[in-house]
Length: 207
Image 1: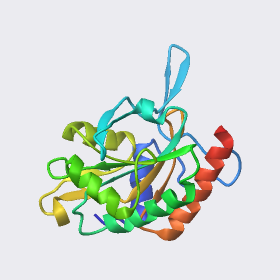
Image 2: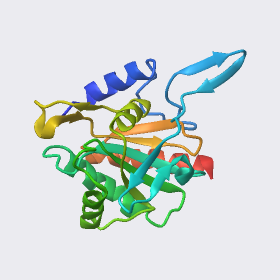
Image 3: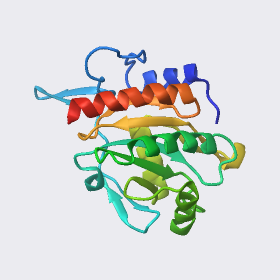
């Protein structure tokens, strides 16, 4: 589904409680999402526990990203529209940060019926990438679609959409404390270039 950048920003602002989508040039990246206050304690939106299987049949869970920042997207291997574009932009990130152990990449398949482990392995091999730097994961259908909401992304089964799914091309940056810190339009090379600056800012902040 090819949303405009303006619509992406609008959907994101609504989903995270009208947080400002404008660039944050000064200071640390904001922590995105709702703030909760319970019994005097303040907590920020956090990615919940998860467990999926990657292209090498290995379990990928929160522990995989312990102490790491990571970039997330949602895709499917037979996608006829935006996924090939987004994956080329993710490949830019892979190549730039391949030797940087502070950052990992995580791609969730939303076609859990057809994107088996061997299919994901072949897809990753064709891109010339590998785990643990870049994990392509599959798993329980409901769990993958539910966690897309936690990342403020879009994943919807839609038989009328190209390939049978509506989804965004958003790339999401998560810090080592499982907080969402930034996002970009993965179909727009300039947006991804600016996103790299956000990644560098976060890595400098956390390490």
